[in-house]
Every structure is written in structure tokens, then in C-alpha cells.
Length: 147
Length: 147
Length: 147
Image (tube, rainbow over all chains, first blue to last red; front, top):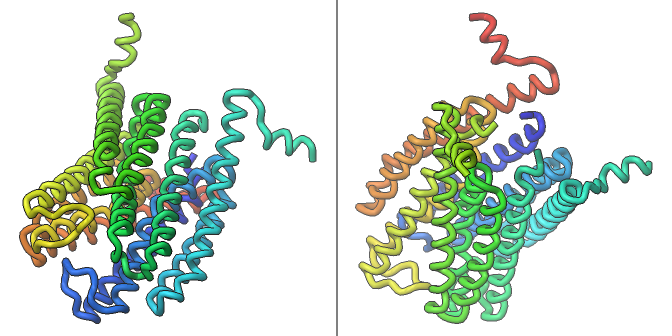
């Protein structure tokens, strides 16, 4: 059974690693600009770094939920691939934002597109499972029969 | 097996959608009040909108954890129903908070009550599973036999 | 099957309870220092309490992900034990931080060490499952045969 979601777990662990890395970069920026906790602002670069990380934190549970929903109800390989893309887009977003507020935009839109794809795949998979479970009508199998 | 948690997945996806919507409303409020990132304050209405969303973000992993625990160890239908109520209560909370700080209170208490119910159901389900797994004593089945 | 992750679910519920408790303590500190929402600063003690809770919130999805990955792919008992330690370390962190900014350090390092352990266990379990699934090579079983 573990094989059913091993790729999803691997991508989740990769994203965990990234989240930890971002937190570490905020700490480093704190020291560079001598911003002593509990303060969370003081230097423009630190402010951007902190905001970038906070934004990643906000989206993280959303990402995990749609990654697993899409992976479980639609297709593990495709969801995991989108998950890796998401990690890459977050990388672009974070480092772009640290440079300048404008620098976050490319990564931001990439993230939005990837999340939208995962939501659509998850919703499609759930609708298909609903039809299969309660109306005994499986679109996936019907499509496979047709071709 | 997918049928065991299809309702939970559907409610999770619904809540993901809501979280994305809240984030989008914060962005809209940002533009309305011309608050340029990385700033996160500046206009009272924006401050409330941002705080409302942040509070929803904070509770989101808690909600997902208790939704799935209650759904898996107690009863999927009941947990999913409470999950839908939670989404509705978050709606009330968010839009109430945007109006005024007092406006958040009804939604807030509703959320607390629903989370408490999910925690109790989850705990009851886990205790029952513990007894069943390690002491071979299943309360649920005993109750079903009685009636 | 529920037995495969009942301990993980129990630890997750324990940590949910702790997160709710922290949120409640922030609310209490709000009232003590008369900081009216949506404000999130105003008194040094409140600032520390709020920051402590925010930091716990940030790490929470990371903790849940590595707890379940380590528990599912490596060993449930060990992961759950580390999970309980994590909850204890968070307790130390939070209450230390409320006292003083320096007070958070012991708990903080404990948390980092525990998360690192869970990440390593999770990664080891996933690598082993990959080898088993795709190369039919199971290290765990080989080791068990050797001894």
C-alpha cells in the first residue's frame, strides 16, 4: 500500500526541507540586520524575507492538501510532478521577493497556476470517485474502454 | 478504499477553496487601500481583513487534523458535516471581522464549538480504537449489540 | 488498518490540543495587556507570547508532515515517541519565550533536533520503500535476516 503514495510522501518531505530552509534564511537575515526577536521588522530586506517566508507558510497546508487529494484521487505521478514544480516556483518566489517586492511576481503567478491545476485534478478525481462509489459510474474506466 | 474518506477529501477541498478565496480578498483589500507589499498594515479595514485571514490560516492545520481524525476514527459522515459547518462559520467570521472587530465574535465562537466537537469525536474514536486494538474491547460493537 | 496509525493520530490530537492551548494563552495575554484586535503588538510580554505562538503555528504543518512520514514509512512507535517529545519541547519553548526572548532557546534547539530526527527517519523510510517498490530490494528485511 505504501507504494500508492510514496511519491507524494517524497515530494512532501522535499517541501518540508524547503520550508525549513526558508525559516533558516529568515534567521540568517535577522542576524545580518541585527533584528532581535520578538521584533519582526526593521530593515527593508529583512521585511521582504520575512514576508516571503510567511507567505510560503500560509500556503503550505493548502499545498499539502491539494497535493495529496490530487495524488490520491486522480494520479500520483502527475500530482507529484506538479508538487516538484511548486517547490521550484516557491524557490523563485522566495529569492525573487528577497531581492525586491517586484521580484516575487513570476514565482507568485507560477504558484497560483500550479495550485489551480492541483485543485482541478483533485476535484476531478473526487467527482469521479463519487460517481463510482454512489452511482457505480466510473468515467476513467469508460474512457479507457473507448480507446 | 477511497470511499472511506471521499467526503473528508471533498470537505478538505472545499476548505482549500475558501482559504484561497480569503487570500484573494486580502490582495483585493491591499489594492483598495494601496498598501504595498511587504507592508501588512496601514488602513483599519485592511488590518482587520489581514488579521481575519491570518487567524483562518492559523487554525487551518488544526481543523484539517481534527476533521480527518474524527472522520477516520469516529464517523466520516458526521465529521464531514461538522467540516461544512466549520467552513460556514469561517465565512461568518471573516466577513464579520472585515466589517468590524466585534463582527468576528459570532463566527469565532461557532468555530470554537465546532473544533471542540471534532476534537471530542476524534478522541472518542481513538480511545475506542485503542481498546479494540490492544484490549480487544470494542465499545461501538457492544453498543450495537445492545440495541 | 486503523491500528497502523493510531499512535500517530493520538499524538496529532495531543499536538492539536497544545496548539489550541497556545492560542488561548495569546487571547488571555491580550486581555491582560488590553491589546484590542486587530492590533498584534503593544506590550513586550504580549509581543513575546504572540511571537511564540506564531512560531509554533509556522512549524505545525512541518511537524505533522514529518511525524506521519516517519511513522508510516519508518516506525510508528519511534515517530510517535519523538512526536510526544516535540510537544514537550514546544511547551518549554513557548513558556520560556513568554518569560524572556532568551528563554526560548533551549526549547527551540530541542525542537530543531527532534524535527531533524523525524526528517531523517522519514527520508530513510521513503528510500527503503523506493528500493523495495522499484528495485525489489528491502534493506529492513535484509537486516532482519542478518541478525
